[in-house]
Image 1: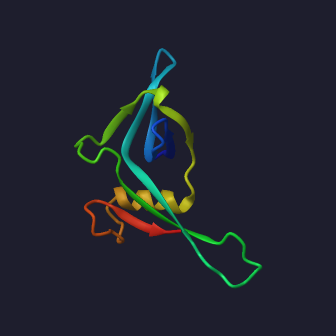
Image 2: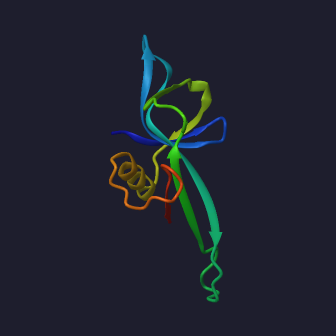
Length: 117
């Protein structure tokens, strides 16, 4: 599995197993398998220790990218993608557990999980 984090022109962060779609060695698009939208919420931690600066906690939630679609593989044109990067290990693990059905932390919202990092 080649799990990557995709930043779309819409501003959405999507994590997915991604493959290039080629025609005559020319990039035509990307195929996202089991894409999930990542939402990030910052929580600022107040600390009394002056040696600790900019301490923060991130809450990350993911849900299916196009929630009303039955499709598990979604093609995306290359002009919709700003960049593709390697996700941090914790986010990649969270995604793999979610799509493999082994994630034990599921929120009360349907098909949405949440972890703190």
